Length: 224
Image 1: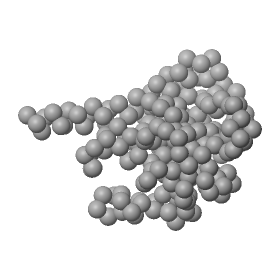
Image 2: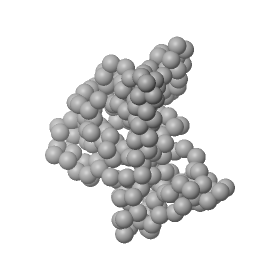
Image 3: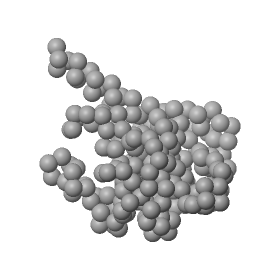
Image 4: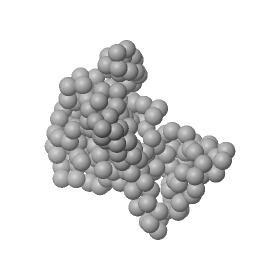
């Protein structure tokens, strides 16, 4: 009986993670500025969008850099601009914080990098922690709160904990903000929360934050 309850618990938490992606796609499909496309067999990002800038933009809008699969629905803007800031799910301006700040919105599956004047300088998709991680048998969601980056590494950063018992999972351009929680690059940002608690970013976004934006102790605000 206990085993059945645990199995049901795990299945429940595994199923709710993709709900974020479905909710965001549904919201965009209802937006008159977008239309939605159902992926067909053989479709790839590169086949659907010829220009690399278009591929990058539509991946960002859909919060994912992983492969397309038949039956998947993606949102596409009716007018494609070369300015990604036009498609940000986060506000273009916030009250001036007086310092640089990275805002992570778990609900929007996105981050925004804001200057001291409160102006959005950059945004990108994220994948936060899953509600439950079977390999560690515990909740592993990313904790909301206010933090600061306290250490960072370059392209060679890796996990000392995952995979469990071995470590070695790549975490390029990692920026730690709370214990073992970090912002870092990943080729697996799937459009929903899928990590052990870290905030996965597109690798180019992590590199930009690490090298061009962070001053070594940048404020990080994680919102639900």
